Amino acid sequence: MNKIKEKLSLLPMLPGCYLMKNKDGNIIYVGKAKKLKNRVSSYFNRTHTGKTARLVSEIDDFEYITVNSEVESLILEINLIKEHNPKYNILLKDDKSYPYIELTDEKVPRLKVVRVLSRKKNHKYLYGPYPNVTAARNVVNLLNRLYPIRKCNTYESKPCLYYHIKQCLGYCANNVDQKEIDDMRSDIIRFLKGDHSLITKRINEEISHYSENLEFEKALELKKMLDYINITLTHQQVETKDNIDRDVFGYYILKGYLSIQVFFIRDSKIVERHSKIMPLIDEVDSELTRYIADFYKNILIPKEILIPDILDENLLSEYLATNVKIPQKGDKHKLIELACDNAKIALEENFELIKRDEAKTIDANEELKNLLGLDKLDRIEIFDNAHLFGTYNVSGMVVFMDGKPNKNEYRKYKISVDQNDDYGTMREVIYRRYFRVLKDNLVRPDLIIVDGGLGQINVAEEVIHSLGMNILVVGLKKDDRHATNKLLTSSKEYDIDRQSNLFYLLERMQDEVHEFTINYHKQIRSKGSLASVLDNIEGIGSKRKKELLKKYHTITKMKEASIEELEEILPSNVANNLYHFLESYNLDN
Image (cartoon, one colour):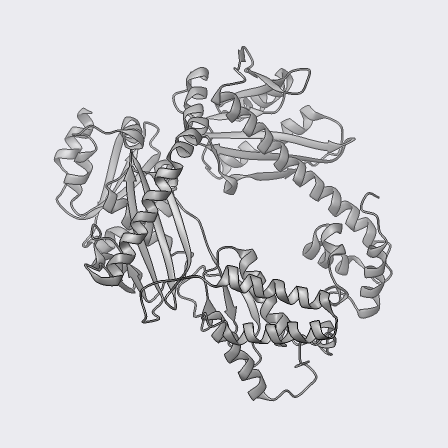
């Protein structure tokens, strides 16, 4: 604290970013401030609760960077978080991205589902966001069913299946009137902008036609389409009539948690909403500003964003390069209040579930740290092996951070030697992983868990020590019924209460790594089987086999492919042979 007090006295009253470090010198939190001296000092001269108290307890040192303006500090803060992935900022991250539908700006347009990852890219006809990718695909399928627009990515040499079933006009071979194409484009744009009347009328006409001709199955299919439009695509009307695309942010705070609610308003309708509940570590305005700034890395920025009055509209306007407003009265102010009310409802309804989940993850992680006598337990790496009678040997590694899985850090390992040797497999995967950690200076785990007993632990420890590393290795022991009941080190056994949150966490880790590894094992086996299948088809050599393996990966995926899709890689006669061979192929072979 003496070192920190000295540094606090030297802090300037300038805008900038601060980087909190733990005793190992790792950056655990990045924040920004209008006045660095006031903000950083507040961590040490007042009482904190919840996650903020936990953050402060781990701070051993800090650095700071001054800038010329608050906008610069916001840009720097987001870049520093992206670069360092600090532990406590990760708690607040939200990588949600929404699907959009794009009508391509081509002479003959196509419809496709996209996720907007860069606001620099120009998308002329982009509509959404949609609740999920299934909803977006359903809309695309509906429009492709009703309008014979282009379906292929590249023009084929002759009309494909879609032409023969009247879902394409055969643009590759026929000279289609551009007016007909433009009329379809206009209808589709009207639908995607929220006017469903034309298509609803068209579907009703087709339902009547099929019913009169006693084609009830086709009529029923169209009725389901109509229900989808009425239920899924007809959204809540709001009190704005200007048809401006806007997003509305609201928030609510309860017992150390921040609830955020976002409304996506398109053509005066709430087309979707987004919720986020997270622990509150920083000041509310800083946390909310950072969240909004980071929110639009995967979301298309609308023409207008409405925010609560605790935020700085000029700061966000400049950073996002769009119109950000704080409405004081009228219909727009009511929208802010509605978003805040929804944020309150979401937090109050989910608060007990959130606390229970925290007890099963973060609190259980803390219990494990104390049980093993570790100074910290931010990162755990768990390993499992799989093979089939000594063949297709693989290993999987999953990562839990602060008691929660971090799927971006999962890794798969194909073992070099196919033999029934669990210890040899463990030796290879541990060496490969931690040699890479040393070589590339990756983050080291605080704990390694192997799915096995004392033999597996000893092998892993031997490799870790040979690399000059000091990381605790533990194993999970199962009883006669294959249920986890003990935690092992090389020198001690720990009984785990089956009713405890710690048992829940260990079991979840074990299940997660096992499922991840088994899925990879199945994929490898299927690739092997697929390669064998392709050897039976005349006309498929090494080059075509490689292309098919790269595209389809498994027999199951290839069996789902149409002849037309196979023809993208193979000549027509070879594609036909493969298609009919797969039709009769038993997946259990």
